Image 1: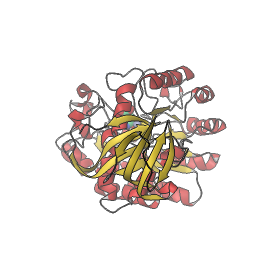
Image 2: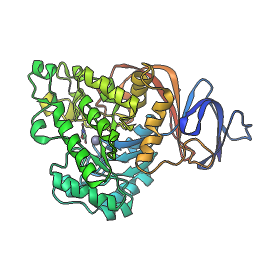
Image 3: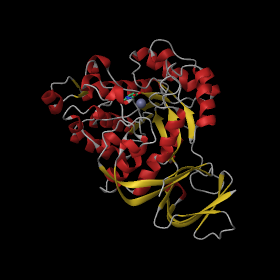
Length: 426
Ligand code: DOR
Ligand code: ZN
């Protein structure tokens, strides 16, 4: 079994590739990357006029299984991921039951091997039930296959528990991913605190609710010497704290998501519940500061925070709507449109931010597009203009503020371990 991808514009900065190449896949691995490879009767994919990238790696998503299969399951979630160009995803533990022990981690991996069309890496919780009080059994979860720990969706409110979590997780080599939210400030808030929240009469969540916790975790990392990773940063203030911490040698890393560098609180106008997400969409100054942080390396990678919800949980009064955006199927287009087409970052940097860098963070980087590496890659048409139509999503979650918006760059094909995980119908 083999596949020959012909004449694509291959972009993989880690391997010094930015030009027209053929890629030969044999079995599950890349056999050869060269300006011209002769076909010897295998399946051929004509990538002329298209771009070929190492498969994207999403280090932060919600697949909702077990427990919330009505929102998403591993089958629908990984199909949606493949449609977004992702060949690997790491899923958060806020399932039901919470992935706070080795059996749930094993269940997720079993389901993924039966039903998943991309690689799935489960993240275990930091505390039992993500309740913030007792540490979860990280060693057993690691043995079962967990790649990191997080109480994402909720902060670890006690600084003492967070400090102990960092120390405990470091013993197992598990990265700790922190959802930064100071609850006394965010409680009851529905969107960013600012002009729009005031005009809508909604209680706002101030930037400080995120930044106080970012500062706390930076200090905990500094005093323990243990790395900490900050999930979904949304404000210029968070970027500033992390930039300064990195400059003095603190082992802090962070991610942001496409909605934070593409959209603002203005999307909430008219009480649009599809724009409700936690942390909330911020203001234009924050959006530009997040882009600057992606440009200068303060932000380590892009993650989707794909958070599918059922229509009945979203299409309700703003205050009662669930937080979250179904993100897999717009992530690349939003990033290409708002970061590369605007000239903020290069295409190569975007590819790195969506493939090598998140994979490396979770200790999963396998080499990108080079002989011997797993054949995980994605093919995109960067000339395509698209109007987002969430009714066509492969995700069960159609909740997106990008619906109806114009973006550029379309994923056409995603290959995982040499097999076709997604191919767009003509
Ligand atoms: O908007 C969000 N949705 N933020 C989170 O932190 C959790 C997520 C979810 O699980 O729906
Ligand atoms: Zn999340």
